[in-house]
Image (tube, rainbow, N blue to C red; front, side, top):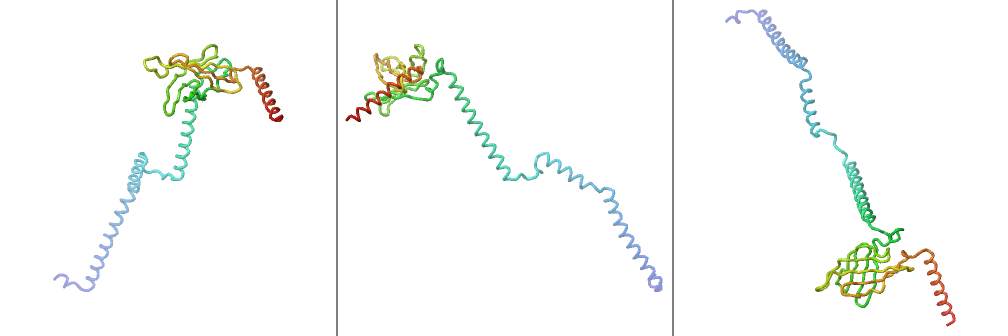
Length: 232
């Protein structure tokens, strides 16, 4: 009833006043939010920064590694590892090799990692200095002895503790050395049961003058053979 008694001017004034109040209320709400933001401008940044630090600590927030670069580094590492392994293997082999006695002038150094063979009847005899000696018949191999030592002032090589004979001792081999123009295994024999003897000619046992003398004799023989052929 009170509104009905108001005149038009009063109604217009009241509506204007209500509108202004409403406007002020909205404005005040906006100001309040801005004040909150202004008073705490970095709270979200602080949380994000903390999270980044945690992720970095466990290596989950790192820049991705270039796959091609990683592959290149891996390849270089594998190549270096392979070279190192080969070098270590070479050093080990050389260390083992240098443990042996190669004679007063190292004249038997060339014997290492070499084997000398001779066929006698149905057997093939194989002598490997610093390792072992064997007798081969077809697919059957009998160990005549393992490397033992030099004997007689480096005039003989001894192989011992080979395969045992039937109701007998372990086999052994004595290789007598003599000067020769080339390495040649000959005259393998078994003078007593399970004890073998052989002869090895080798330049390692020759003096330089002796080699020259032998070479001169060989040249003369070759010349005589040529002359004989021409005369025929």
